[in-house]
Each structure stands twice: as C-alpha cells, then as structure tokens.
Image (tube, rainbow, N blue to C red; front, side):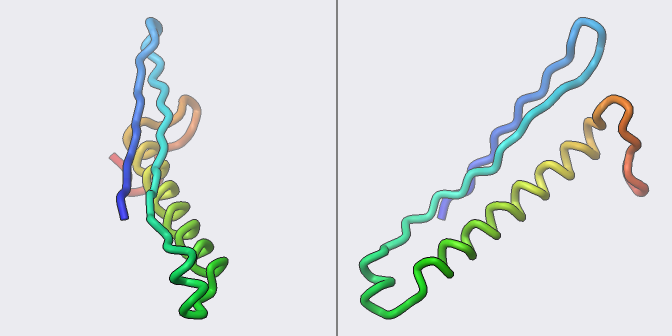
Length: 79
C-alpha cells in the first residue's frame, strides 16, 4: 500500500491564506485471488475506501487547524 499526500498553500497579495489537499491511497487488489479464495471483493474495496476517507479527513482537520479558513473559528485546543 502506498499513501501519497498533496498539499498546496498560497498567500494572496492581500495576505489571505488558501489551501487545498488530497490524500491518495494506492493498493494493488488481486481481484482474481480474492474471488478464488471466496473473499468479499466489495467488502475489501469498502475497507480501503473507509481508510482513504479517514486519512483525508485527518489531513483536512490538520490543515484547518494550521491554516483556518477566513471567518472560521479555530477549534478549541488549536494554536
């Protein structure tokens, strides 16, 4: 499994910080093996998707903590 994060931050001429980010998960799923062993292919794909969404949510939360969106309150415990 390979996880790749992409983060892009920018500061406008007015000093406004903007950002966007992605979390990508690459997993070679041997579909033939899963079918041959009777494993649930859709279930395995769903687990991978949940894992990827959790990584993405975590990354977005950290970016919001570090670079609050203008007008958005910083969560309690944030810097």
